[in-house]
Amino acid sequence: MLDRRSYDPEWPYHDTTSGDYSGGYDGIDISIHQGKLRWKEIALNHRLQFIFVKASEGLYLKDPCYDRNVSHARSLGIKVGAYHFLTKDSGTMQFANFARHIDLDSLDLLPVLDCEDDGTLGWSRRQIQTAVKAFSLACQARYGVKPIIYCSESYYKDYLSPDFDDYKLFIAAYSDIPVLPGKAKYLLWQRSRHGRIPGVWTKVDLDTFAPEASLEDLMIQ
Figure 1 (cartoon, rainbow, N blue to C red):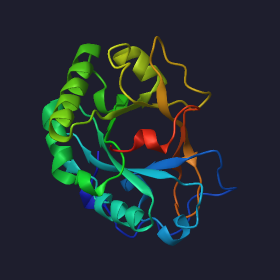
Figure 2: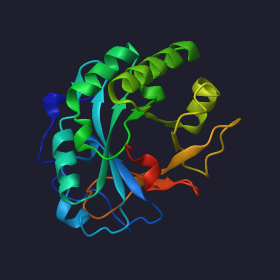
Figure 3: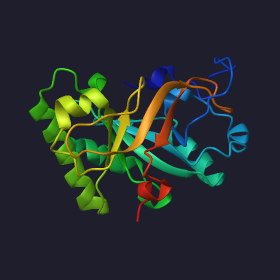
Figure 4: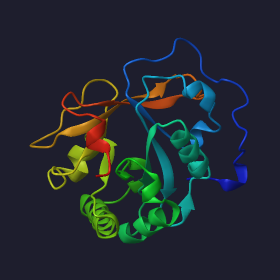
């Protein structure tokens, strides 16, 4: 959960990472947990094709870094999208929170619904699927598009397969390339939670395209 009381717009004050910069990625996803970014350094990173920015969480929370991050990414010409972190609440009402805080016309990439054990721990497979479907239906009614679903490889197998095989999937797997059951195919692979790149003074998630995918697959048509 986000704690607005402890949010400091100037944090971090120094680089908390060390070692060589990471390679082998096409994009990143960011939130309050990365704090203030050094956008002039990020501008020099020609590897970076896209950034997903956390917009909201649950029924009421907005990431306090969202507007700043989207504005800076757009000013650099980096393709940018927004994501919502799913909690144990109505999927329809969570989409309403997400929609309150984003302007889809200012974004390049499809919305992402972030499904994780931290947000839905204790819910059954049926409860999770109900919330994900409700969020998706509301998204389609409002914007005419399905959200990309982000989750771990094991989360997809345990809770979402095969009902969401026709969705665009963004899969986290840190030891090897994702392997999904049935007909499911991933579009994006989050290959690391501990990346180090210029301009980000904390560890950051690193994302790469599936072999047959490209930036065009992420774009709002």
